[in-house]
Length: 235
Ligand SMILES: Nc1ncnc2c1ncn2[C@@H]1O[C@H](COP(=O)(O)OP(=O)(O)OP(=O)(O)O)[C@@H](O)[C@H]1O
Image (cartoon, rainbow, N blue to C red):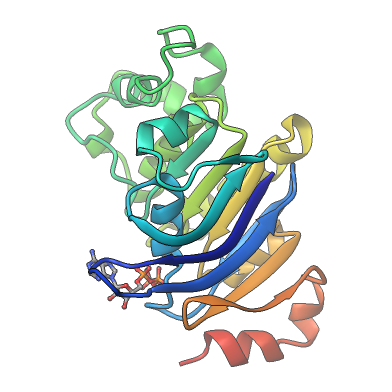
């Protein structure tokens, strides 16, 4: 579904935060992208979404090139993005935040569907309350559902567990696994919390120096043989 070949991208002219970055994601797969701070994981998600310019290589979604498209065009092709830090609108209600997730999809009904409030029950309870009045974990749930109301086929998540209490992290992991299994949602997860990664991912990609240095689909083996975790994640 997603095929990334030799991508080069950075923030200033000539900078190569991504330097020959290649990877792929199969439909319905849950893939984790791991690496130390500053390796370029967030930059990759931003390059994919069109928030960071790509100066080389190709990014293709279901066979169509998406490198160089504007963020709303990438969203319209079925990519949902939950950015690091959530970026919900604190003064908007839960429902209004979810409406924002529909803005980029004029082809969908303009009302928030009922199922959106059922994914995480707290959103139903807090439907008319300000997003900013909720805990960090609840805001993360809101940000995830805001991305899901746009009916993405590929969901990008940037450190969804950051600063969140463990029971909500667990709930988020279970819900996303269920949606991936039952509805064929494809998930690309950038995450430092190895419990969430080992509980969710079917394949782990380890990033170093702007490219993938190692990958494995024997995710559970990382529990008993954590050498790659030590090698690519320890500081
Ligand atoms: N807006 C920006 N302008 C210039 N340089 C940036 C910007 N954002 C990130 N960088 C640089 O790009 C590099 C990769 O950062 P990025 O945030 O992609 O890393 P990361 O792997 O996601 O790490 P983290 O876990 O800390 O978010 C770092 O050297 C960082 O300083």
